[in-house]
Length: 223
Image 1 (cartoon, rainbow, N blue to C red):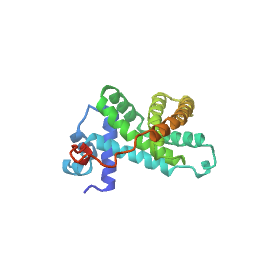
Image 2 (image 1 turned 60 degrees about the vertical axis):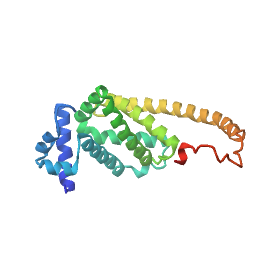
Image 3 (image 1 turned 30 degrees about the vertical axis):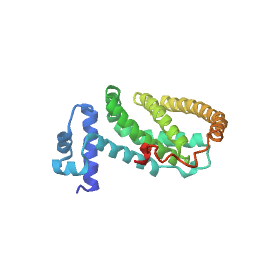
Image 4 (image 1 turned 90 degrees about the horizontal axis):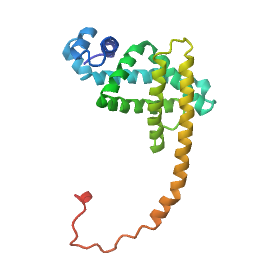
């Protein structure tokens, strides 16, 4: 079984190849060679390039969670989320070219884009947790998906932001969070409007029959 150190070597080799050759420019044998491990060791650690990417994302999540500033706990929710997402960009900084290659590939490969979206949604729920915001329930899932889209737009700016202070990136993140607050306000307003209709639908629903027809066919859910 591969040790944690070996897994880190493999992920590092994967990221180097991704930055240099793009997503489709290498295969798992190249990763094994770059990491200096046998194919059997690589297979035991990661079965696919996607698995290598998932490990990288998990490492970034952990880095951000380790860097959460406790002094931000009393700040407004928006400021806490802003700080967490900027911390995420700081963690991604050494891997900027790998991120660029990955986003380029995702634009050309819908299946890859769907896979990345699912992983990113999990990460953004952790970012909500890091910011002290709810991360479970339908509403939180929708917010997490919104953050996936918003953060990808910010990353597009960040990839070409050569300012050490990342002024353009911070401005883009500000705009995306502003847009998100507007969207969330509309979502909550729509939810409040729908609640009376949902209650009315429940109360007007006919009561179930007390004596079902014994000759009636079973419903599919009873199979």
